[in-house]
Image (cartoon, rainbow, N blue to C red; front, side, top):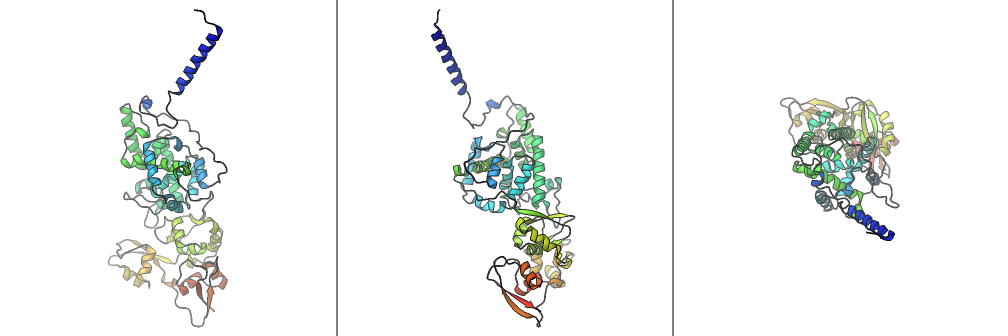
Length: 445
């Protein structure tokens, strides 16, 4: 049969269009999770090359914040994963309108540090959100399985990663030490599961043995062995979706009607080396911060005394670091730790110990975070030294009333009038907090 050149050309064009559009319709929609049949040929995990860092679409004139930095460091492509388990968790977060407001208030102390440490290791910045899932970034969080700290280490795993735990100190609550341990553990799990971060995160929740057994079970049955196809404990089945749901919200907060509290991309604390025990209430005074702020930055110490076994990095708000270092350098040894340690003996009671050391029972309870009256033989107590409790001022001293101004602290007022901070506290019954307009009584020579 004879075909004209125009007919031939039109025929080839038609054939080319059929092939082109036919190829386009053989793939699923963008972002759809692979089906089981599409993965059925994969029997095991093979080592992967490092995944390129995924970055969300750039927003025009978007201010630079800690949230945008985290978003720019996403590697797990959370926004392109379409899975009903993620949708369910995202809806749960959306049903708590104050979730980010409450948790970000705690996280602001620690989140920048965690992001910095992840960036140093070139790890996915989605992992900076893991403490939101674990503890709501609460260093005092303690679970029924005895997990503690923002990363929720159980005692045995904490010891594996060199987090010391004793009567005076719990390294699982130490912000910098526990972060190092958590990132070490996650890196180990990522290597163990051939670079699959979702399996690594799942194993962080239920253990490498748990995930490893699930992977082998699927492989033996010829089934896909990725996270989405494994049968894992109920908590772990929701654990990775929670992380990815948070990532999706942070990736596009406006899409999910979420307002992220402003967090600046700058350090919150500085690390100041101390080599000897130090009363944390005294440290708070030197830094002009509240005792609660000192506790939340240094939550590893179980009592109000920092008891380092060697040089230790005490965390101080970065704006107060210089003031604190200068004040600490001139602090007399007698004021560093006005405490003694006491080991409870058979027959002891709080009342008896308090009377023996010329203290009130409430003071003894406060120093040791004891709510009731129960103490145990062998228990170690921190006992305030009675010699630091000041008596009433001598009659020959001249009384003076000082009105607190904005920016004043016990430290600055004591230095101005050449008196000791402990005297100011004893004369006025104050701890650390001062407010403008408050009147303090001073007894001058």
